[in-house]
Amino acid sequence: MVYALAIINAINLTAFWIHERKYEIGIRKAFGYSNADIVSMLFWEMCVINLIAVVIGFSIQWMIRSLLSKWLDYPVEITSTTIFAAILFVFATAFFTTAIPSGKAVKIQPVEAIRG
Image (cartoon, rainbow, N blue to C red; front, side, top):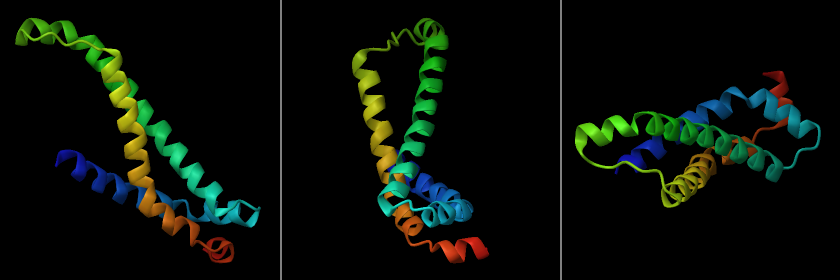
């Protein structure tokens, strides 16, 4: 449930982010970017943002894992499984958060975007 709410929030933020970049997307379309190029650009930008969040999260976990192990008496370890799961969630989140808003991005007409 928490993941679903986070995805809904991320979709709203991505829609706002795409709306604010309407001019840039219109210019790119005017210079020959296809709809697939626009969607791919948005997807990979979201992947980079999510990967940065994962790196920050693992860094924080790495820094405080010894404290948590002592206080909670529960070993906190970073394994290859947790790294793989985090990367899987990065791509799933990027897909879900760009799927709906990118439909709006491909409908942007270059002339309307340039006029503002």
